[in-house]
Image (cartoon, rainbow over all chains, first blue to last red; front, side, top):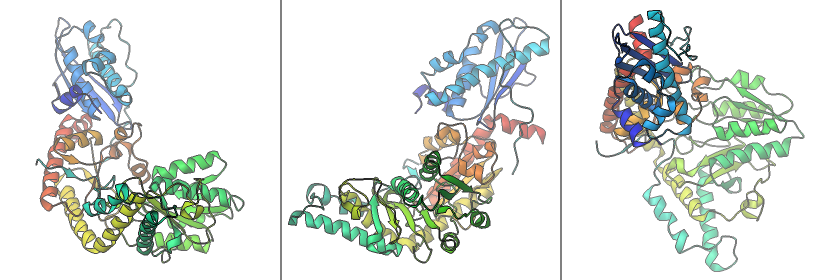
Length: 145
Length: 392
């Protein structure tokens, strides 16, 4: 079902974890649909993404696209990171099954959401970045057992 | 562990070697058409009749009430569509449940598009159909009640005898999809007041591509596969002789071993359930604790998603199944888990393990250890778990 690259990133996800006091954090998706991605960015004064981490609740493709997206933006400028599209993530993974394309969109949105958070915190505007549309709903809560 | 641990016996089972052996001569030695008149073909007629006899006996049915089909799905389609066709003068209302297999649910949707009204009865939190609601739903125009014998995902066994009694009391036909139950629990169509019953060979160590529909004598439904005069003119097409022979052999073996086999499965199942519930935090068992198939365990692990869990189990040579949306291609998780009241996010994190009698306690131990490791790993990756821990 998945390419060898997807399986490899799923089995050994890159940059999984959290960043304390991150410059920007973005969470997209919702638990109802079965996918939530959270990206943490550490951006230096030059506007370079020094570090990036992710956490994902979701299927194999969701984990692999998160992992690949972090690799593609690490060490890049904000403008370069904005150019990382879902298509670029998919290509880097040698493709995704059609039903999993939305995972790559989520990865792109997660990066945008983290950059948006960074811009909000700094009170700046990032050219070409508008507020991401599918930020996680506040009312969404997980029932406990 | 190098060996594969196959814990998906509700999906399909291994065809038993004895079954394969019984089938083989009917491919290349005794390959005659049962409908032919010459001596060479009569042994094929006999083989089909013998299998029918074994299966009729297993269900407490008459020999002429068993009709072979191409599988359980065909049997479900036939039962519903042909009943609708034969009884639409009486009425166009059918009652089923929210947790049926898609073979029934999608057939009901089709019938709805043809002007039939369908009532989908609710189930309780354990997946047991609400009998009072079911009975109240019956109208003068109700022609059929179709309730599965046991659920394929959560293993819940329905109160079939009570449903049969309700149907009989109101003079409504009763069909049950017994694909998961046949060979695992005792079924007597007369005792349970069943008018039609679907079953499949490959769920009980028989071959794929063969099933049956039991139709009680007197029920007037006809064929919806037209052609030759096979199966008393109710299901045309040259009989799948090797498949039917295999089905018969599989049923014979399943009936002979039922008590011993299911006792063993129940011990393994209960051990598995006990360990998982005791050793994995934030987990629940789906389905009824006792009124469940001997081979079925179904869990929901909070904060994680089922497909990831399945892939990681597969990496550890464990074959399992999930009610996660990601295994079906839609965004909604299993309709069964939603019907028992699980929120979407909990339903997404479900895992179905269906054992057989050859699984060992050692293999269950290995599986539980792997589940613990994997669930822990996936939770460390999960933003839902992170939020949960922060809030505490």
